[in-house]
Length: 606
Image (cartoon, rainbow, N blue to C red; front, top):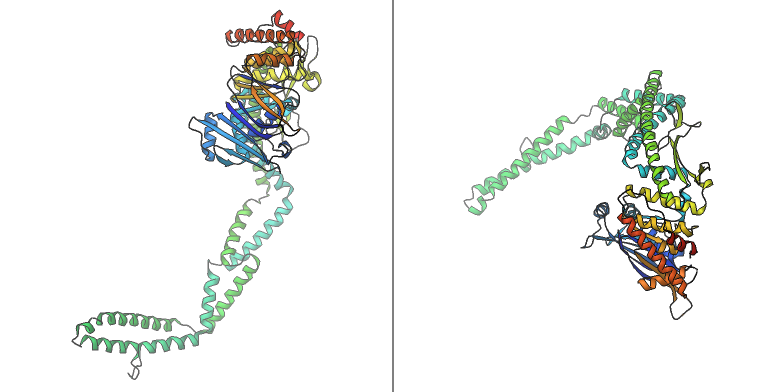
């Protein structure tokens, strides 16, 4: 539920705070006062599109803040993005729009992507405006509405259908690619096989190119290396005739001298000289071994150079080094396994596709059955609501029919019909209205006037209320094009919807406003220093509410007659709310009383 909303610098509203309670809240005001800005603010809180043109002239940015009594899903979202709810469990969402068009979103004191507010709105808020009536005319939206009403009975088979469809499309695409690209794939396969044959003939080993570089360098400079190593060994070990004692002999003599000195300090150095002698002995032995291994064989050098040439021929074609060549070969083997265009491979792939098609058709049929059952229930529930909206002879039909496939790849045979297997199934869903007895059913865009379309949409929302998890619903002039008795019934239905949801309605009809649990008004004013119009929002008390309803009754706020009509309208609405709340669940709403009908008939709307 939305507990509070504050708007600053949005359109004609400079600074306004709306305190919202459960039940039905109506928002009224003169044309141009800024009622739509309240809906715009709610849309921004729900992650809607930000437009710099909505920012009040002369201010740097518009700010909209909302405090939600958060649901379990909303709190889970807050935890996911690191947002913190307040101590009372409420969650604050904010949206700023700067004059240059930049937009920022915050949730629980943390900056978040705008999409996070959109996810929050999915769990907390649904805004219905006149654009929703236009969307109601689109087939895809009509199917989505039916699926929303059906709930899990459609959601589960739809999820299974989509999972199988994704695999079916993937296998089908691969089969088409293999068939249509057989020549190209055969050429690619020949190239890969040639490369593998060439690489396997050379048989490069990991790191072999680097090892050969080091060996070739040693073989080329073998004489110089031998001379250097021999001189180093001589410096350590000395000459055989003893003429040059070397480092080892000198170190041994030094150790003998300090060990036999009789001085404790000097004798203490003998241990360190032992370590020196051990190191010199190890190095001397390693030098001797190096000299033994050092090969100046020209034949070996030729072999190394020839091997380097073989590897270089591979690295010029396939990779920068032998490790890369080995990796290329492995990738080529894997790619070859997917380039099998033999008749056997194509037949196996086609069989897999056909098996998936049978499985998919089963899921599609199950989905169609679930939608057909839900369509009957939705039509019955909506028709019952239309009877109470001054359309007693009208009925709504919800048809579910297969969408015939054209010349496309996503064709599927379901129950003997060749259908288009779309992402949402093979069904087309259409809402058709029978406006009165004896009339034929017509699609909504042909058979419904603007006022009738408003009532159909509201009837659908009431029918959907039980399956809609969103706690807050906002209606922006859903009563457009409606007046008289129909307007009274719209108000009554909105009050009925408010028994299970928080409902906020922007309206220009006093018949609708009379059913509110609380009444907010948007009023225009000036800033006192310039001819700049600014609006504020305030809550009306009982006396002020009577005056506002009288104003909406064709501007009769200054007459006793207007106030009397307003009081009569409020009394009739209160009586209806009380009787509706006393009804058992699922009972039909009683028809309007004569007294209320006379009031509605005399009320022209605002």
